[in-house]
Length: 206
Image (cartoon, rainbow, N blue to C red):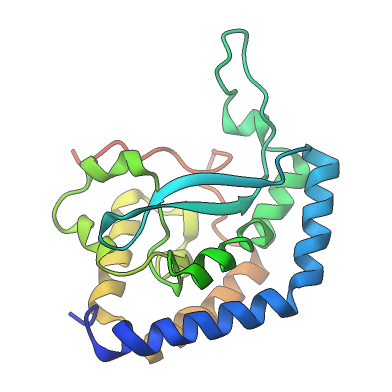
């Protein structure tokens, strides 16, 4: 496995700091414009924060731009994603602009530019030993699974790609994933699972 190589321990982190800092500076006008649009379209708060497990399952607060409303039913429960996800929110997700605040998570060291996407904390007890290997590296803004279908995959396929990344991670592999990410975003492929607004929850291995 390559997850504990010199590249992943030192070089990858240095590149994450450098690239995320430059990206925040260069994209600051975009960040400001999107923040204003979210405030106008969806109200406050502008950012969506949620706890996610990172490397070695350490939990951190991941930040994204809001893409859903806070509509609830009569009992105070949030309505389904497809009801709360607005047209504006769909466009944010399709272009991946909602992910831009994660650049600050990368700068802090919670995440990496490339790695398995951080999922929900409640999934941790549901992984088998093989799937848990996805937490041996920092989670990424984008990853190998995302350039192979994003949310259109089955969970089994997604975790297989995540583990494959952990086992093969290298500078060349990261560059390849980054290049394919640009193509995937431009084509707006696999933003949601077929027939769903986002993706069906992971319920464990049968």
